[in-house]
Amino acid sequence: MASEVTFIYDLLVAIAVGALVGIEREHHRDEHIVLAGIRTFPLVSVSGFIVSYLAVLHPDLSALVMIGLAIVAIFAIGLLYIQYELKIPGFTTPLAFIVSYFSGVLIGYGHVLEAVVLAVATTFLLISKRHLHRFAQLLTEGEIIGALEFITISFILYPLALELHLTGSWAIFGRGGALDLSTTILIVIFVSSISFVSFLIVRWKGPSRGLRFSGLLGGLVNSEAATASICGLANERKGIVGAAASGVVLANATMFIRNLAVCMFADPTLSTASIVALPLFAVSIIGIGIGMMMKVEMGGKEPMKVTSPFAIVPALRFGIIFVVVSAATILIHQYVGAEAVYLTAIGGFISSAAVAASVSTLTVTGQVDPWIAAETILIACAISSLNKLLISRTMSRDVFSRSRTALLLTTAATLAALAATFAIRIVL
Image (tube, rainbow, N blue to C red; front, side, top):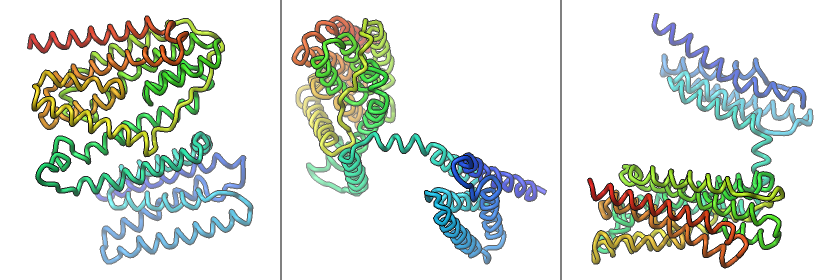
């Protein structure tokens, strides 16, 4: 009885996953003739389910799965030919045909959850066609090439780093070493990914949402670069100084959230993040509140100029800073003392995210105490906030004068959080 119930349940799921894709295809009926829709796709997924179900019951019939795939592939090719004759563009429906078959096969082999996830993912890709096309158009050809180079090199280097067996003084770069190259590559990929997503949203929505919105997301990309870009815009148009100052303050505020995310990724044990999470989050909220309360002009809707972080040069620059700060931290800790690790926070002038990543990573290997790592991150963030003052002072005195008080308040809040963290460590 149980097997019959399981069969009926799996059959219904196979119909459902096929219907999910079929319903999406039916939505195109107003645009062109729909050759395969709400009835065809469930039949395809049910076919995949039946052949795999029989293959499980009778292993000698396992070839049925491949035979079924060949038949479905022939139908997909025939569908493609009919589309060509009817001048219906696209390959998505024939490919969705094959994916639906595989969804049914997964169900027959007992992988029901995987089949549902596959169907949902496929439907999402199909239904978001216009949005994905618009998203792809946000990037220039050079940015796409840069992203492909970055992804290719990253996914070649990471497996090689995992297999790297170093001895002697070079062991520090091997698996489990204080400067583990595989960990370094992962952190660079993670930070670049956060920056790239934010970069795309800035490119997509920045011009229409204004400098405040651009500043909020620009801080996740690179708060220093965002500050420089915003100040440059303010020099070109004096009528957006208020919006530019607000954007700088907001870019600085979201930097704290980015550094918290980097800290959590670099230290999976969360020993450092658990200490620094509340201070960083609190200061970020304070900074965002101050930035949003600043008076801005109605015309402050200029597009912020930010370059794509998914490229070799920005990733390499971050990786070098990360390794240098990590190496300096180890040397200072070993030859000067644990408390002297605070000196590495000076790296906040260049990249507070690199400081956060390096000290968090070193807490995993026991090189740095989590409390000292947390305090170092807060110092680096305070230094980075002050650096925004230097950048704005150099590039636009008008923006500097409008953002100075807000940035100093954010820095003061960071130092107050640092003092509270230090006091708690002393008490504990």
